[in-house]
Length: 254
Image (cartoon, rainbow, N blue to C red; front, side, top):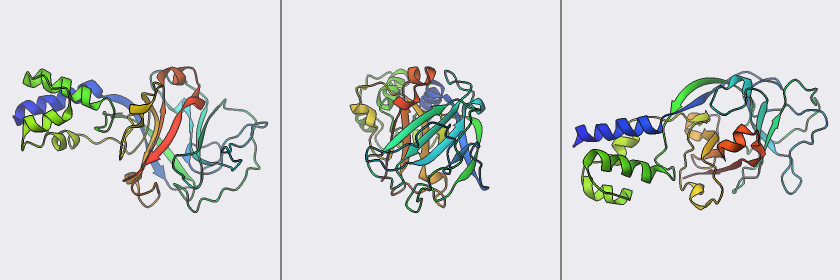
């Protein structure tokens, strides 16, 4: 059984493999124009600082110049910014911005209290091309894994629960889940969740994960509830049309 299940793992990885960029958090104070997590945003003159529905200033979570990204469908230039509320409420209050680069920008920006924020200071980041695989918490996982098991074992399952009965004491779920490691902080990879994928209940197609930030990347620097994960979901069409404001940002935790 184990040999045949290794074929399931191989096929699962082949069919869900996806290019992404992993993000490494570095020490060092970034400038307004640097790729970073936290800190002061690049905000062109004439643009209002992002606020929540109650008029409170949001905190910059991520800033990336897309000229440093080479992913299918992504623009080759422009600066992407994700803001969330500094108190990290649930559900998340957020704003996603996209600006042309090279514009004259504001140098006098509000100071945001980061004492209860996801990061308590600004960090430079580096980007490296990588590969991610579908999370077992992805709303598409059941269909994908059942199809592959049916193909390899010549069965006709529709639900993961049936696989538990079929494999008995053979711990298929852990073997699959432990066969690869998705990067903790990514652009363009797969989303992950500690609880339920919100796309089960979404009427809009937001199958792309613009940004994922998992607490386990660095517990000394990242605070998202109780070992939480923040995710930014968007459609491929909105990425291609640079409509990043249509993204959905939220987080969950254990």
